[in-house]
Length: 86
Image 1: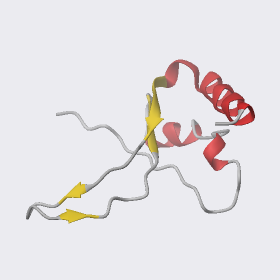
Image 2 (image 1 turned 120 degrees about the horizontal axis):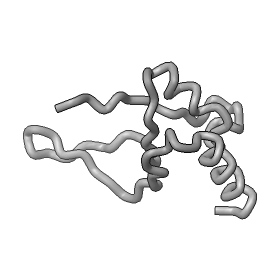
Image 3 (image 1 turned 90 degrees about the vertical axis):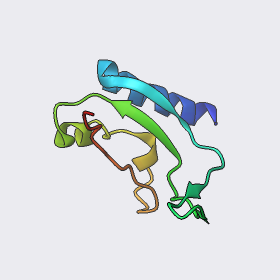
């Protein structure tokens, strides 16, 4: 990661502040195990970050300034999921 990109990530994490529960990590090689025991191609997810927000809309607002969305190319995206209670 370049120094510039590291600074952009640091700035975004600072902006998110205490809502940042786990800064996450990039994903390495992976696979998908299907219920019939076969393997499938994994999605193109590249990493994870966990934030705490009162709603999906509030979580979406926390993506503002995220370096992944800086390119405005339509090539990268952030998927947001609620962690359901078990």
